[in-house]
Amino acid sequence: MTRKVTPWQVLAQRDFGLFWISLLFSAVGSQISTIAVAWQVYEITNSPFQLGLTGLFRALPVMILSIPGGVVADRMDRRRLLIITQILAAVLALILGLLTSTGQVRVWHIYAVTFLSGAVGIFDAPARTALIPLLVSSEQLASAYALNITWRQIATLAGPFLGGIVISVFGISASYFIDALSFFSVIVCLAFMRARPSPPPEKKESPLQSVRSGFNFIRENSAILGLMSMDTCVNFFGAYRSMMPAIARDILGTGPAGLGALLGVPAFGALVGSGVVMAMGNPKHKGKLIIWVTLLYTVGLISFAFSRSLALSLVIVFCLGLVDAIGETLRDTLVQLITPDRMRGRVKSFDQVFMSAGTYLGYAQMGTAATFLGIPGALILGGSLGSAAVLLVAKFARSLRNIES
Image (cartoon, rainbow, N blue to C red):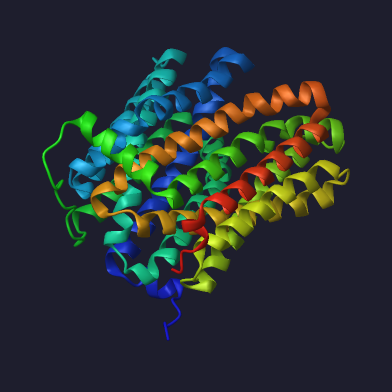
């Protein structure tokens, strides 16, 4: 009988516990910096359009560099790669802090640093995700990825609040200096880590061959391909967050406070969802569980379309955050268990492309559908098409349904 895994056992693993704490500090610093960027751009330009461009400059590196980032993560020692990316990220934050404190900052400086920070993050994310299986046992992997979501959600909740305080009390430049310092917590952790080094590639191959072999691995593995296809479709058809300002004002009749609650409550749901996975330990039949929780997510989207009450809507988006976190944790765990270590960086990078394409294109799709069908109609259509995608994957990706682990 398999012994139940608790989150405290996972955090007690020296390397993983230090890594988790350092990533939490770093993520809070990054959230503080993100708030500072948005505030500063609007302060300089007074233009909503130019404020929106910061999102574009964050998205472009994801679309352009995700796959090269995965190739690098599989060809370098991941700990060394993470140290390099953290140093570069700290330098970029310091540059913005110095430009701001000396009064030399211009909006194009912020756009350039935002783009470069996004590019650094693209090389950081596959290496970070692929490093986790080297820090814990396979039985602890589900709890480790649940904890991975937990630090992100804690930072999402605490970072903006702390950012507002830092900006109002100490000024914008202090936000960037705090962000730079937060990266050094990860650098120190990585320097003292005793994790096994990443194995070198089995054979010498060109970067293009590495990309092709990663693509072929995903194409030939119906479980991973099914998971990526299902998530891409659900993100594309169910991009409900892009409509939140209109939902809050025009459907629920609430103001900025209600909008903030609608955007923040899913993070609380995600914390609970990651806690559920940690309480489950290492659940069996992860493939079937992922299918069921993803289907439940699409049903939640349809339910959200019918709500005309702020209280009910908050309950629904809480549940959406909860099941989304459960699905993401189990999906990341299953993909890492299926994927050999030499491929983990590339598989994660392809996953980033799938997810980002689904999300960013989904914003445009949801806006177009809402123009013709209204927001409730667009949500119902998106949830229905997402449900259909889940059911198709459940029918044809038999290897996903039959996974016992």
